[in-house]
Image (cartoon, rainbow, N blue to C red):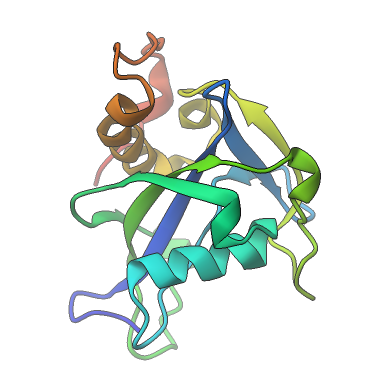
Amino acid sequence: MIDSQGYRPNVGIILCNQQRQLFWGRRVGQNAWQFPQGGIKDQESPEQAMYRELGEEVGLEPHQVEIMGVTGDWLRYRLPKRFIRHNCQPLCIGQKQRWFLLRVLCSETDFCLDHTSKPEFDSWRWVKYWQPLREVVYFKRWVYDRALQELAPLLFPEGAPNRSRTNYLRHNRR
């Protein structure tokens, strides 16, 4: 499902623990790290897609998490030209995402990365709140920054931790 502007509807999932650290997953067979995410199917709401992706990618069920919040609008990123499949119709130029912040209510031993026959992640770790901005692939950094900024007050009502403003947003928007 691609919208009229060429964006695929998608959900992003930011999982946090009681120490306010974030789940950070390594993509299978790569040195690439990201939050769980996935496409929204026809007739599926963003929340339904989020729970489906949570089960597929992390092996967690709805009762094992608490929704703390969701971004107010779609956040978009464009794919680099080399990743656009020009032979596919309709043409997908990027993704538009609704981001969910979830608090984990279960034990880490309940996480199951190989819940499906084609796992997304082969490893994971807890990281500090702003660390993903330094490690995620460059074309997703702007969206990650926007999602983390918007959702930070829900996790840090006293004010989000400081972050070093390095060059992680160097390739932010085109």
